[in-house]
Image (cartoon, rainbow, N blue to C red; front, side):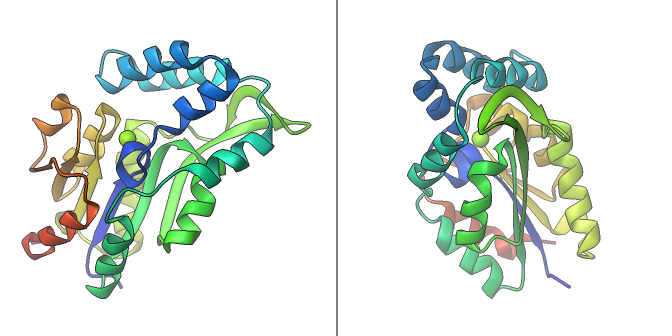
Length: 212
Ligand SMILES: [Mg+2]
């Protein structure tokens, strides 16, 4: 049984990039997708609608492209140190992403995350159809995954820390024992227990002593 649980957002939190913007640039729809992303992250647009609209714009991209994006994303400074610190302290760390399994799977394995969840592209003949398959990871799903991940590990919610940067992370942050806004949008930083402005994820480890 783990001592505590960290649930961490992926795009712009665990990694430096917004993967969907990288995919959009390759697909030649960068400005259209960036405009939708910005509105969603500022809480001006429902996440599921905005995700569907953005994924539809990626129709025709190849699975090979996803592989090359997975290789080019960069870990946020301190990410590996945080994972090691969590494990050294007897905790577990899981990632929840409104992004995509094709990118997160190699990253999660490489980092030694204890579990991860993301959206999955529908693919036909090696090409994205512009739709997703399976459950969509939106803000409610992120919060539900936090609750379920804690319960299956026998961890009380007071002993969870949620880390994120976008409006999509607010629900899981409200659910967690401690909420951390990481280099976050103002709407997120304003509502978090702790706000980290320096781009160093290892700073989250300094909060372990505060876990009830
Ligand atoms: Mg994010």
